[in-house]
Image (cartoon, rainbow, N blue to C red):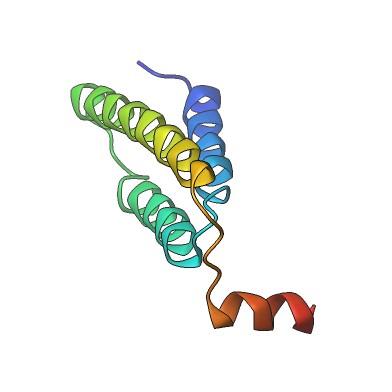
Length: 89
């Protein structure tokens, strides 16, 4: 069975990678989806289900990393909301 430390590390890595998206919409979706998925399954007790969820989360982490790299190859098409947020802070 996976250790609590490994699960927390995977959660943090997913959040960290999700925050690297240049696109506001992708970034917010990735972070929200990660939080929602971990909250949804926080009380899971079945070891097989936990192992399956962890495998899926690790695959998603790889996908997010690839998508972030692809996103960095292309231009910076910022949304109006992003420029407003930057100036407000």
